[in-house]
Amino acid sequence: MAVPDTTPDTTPDVASGTAPDAVPTTAPDNVLGDTVLRDTGLVEAGLDALEAQLRPRRGGLTVLRDRVLPPVLGLALVLGAWQLLWAAAVEPDWVLPSPVEVGQSLLGAAGQGEVWPSIGQSVLRGVLGFAVSVVIGTVLGLLVGRIRPVRLAVGPVLAGLQNLPSVAWVPPAIMFFGVTPAALYSVVLLGAIPSIALGLVSGLDQVPPLFLLVGRNLGARRLTSVRHVLLPAALAGYVGGLKQGWAFAWRSLMAAEIIAVSPALGPGLGRLLKQAQDAGDMRLAFCAIALILVVGIVVNLLVFAPLERRVLRARGLAANGR
Image 1 (spheres, helix red, strand yellow):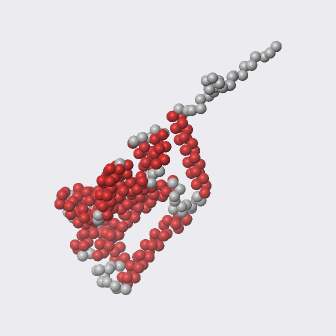
Image 2: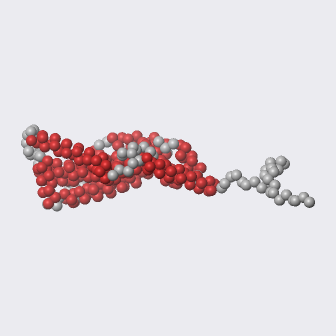
Image 3: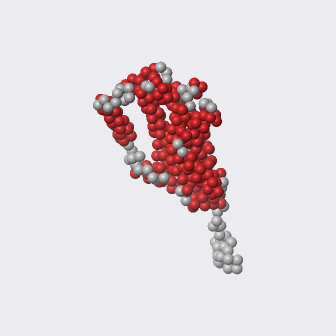
């Protein structure tokens, strides 16, 4: 007695050219997108783990030697050369004071309550002006970078504004707004926006077209494409533009505070430097310059240097020692 064959028939139908019981070989678009994103995440996680294994862990002494000691030595060399020039009596004391005298003047100004209000007010103005510049510069950079007619019309203007000294905007700003905070902020915006926009344009120019094509196939269009494809891919150039934009914003603000002096504006590092000029106090002038320099260095070390280092490491462009 023959046993009936219960095995499913998977023989292709010659007439129709299909296998009735075959499993479909295509997946829905959302399943395919999730699979690609999951596989990409696994690859990135594996690369990050490999990089973590290859990069040796640095102890506290190594960080102190590589990060702290070089700037300290550089500052010591500058102060030493300054002290030697003072000791050689190249200029009179009222023209070239010694570092010790400048330090004493700084302590005296701090004791009179002139230092911290000046630092706080200038930093607040710089941060507010820079924040508004980032918003405007980012939108303008996207428009210039992605729309060709806008690029042809606005691109040369942005390049010209970037090369224009920001101090040139101070007199027109005072004539238009008066000696008010609006004049200071307008100078900051005009100094920072072109650098931020052009930095983003430079980053967008380096985005491979394949990225946009892949993002479009995965459903990233318009604002979604800008957020998830364009900005992440152009992040290196964008961060460089932000760094340069802050430098221009801080520089523009100091120029505006030196020229636009009024009791209504309150304290500021630029005003402190102007007071030193009016009083003929070279020690106080060096104090104000040192404070302006320190604020710029601190912002760069605490904000932009870590951000730039993180972006470069994420793209495999930074050495292990950075």
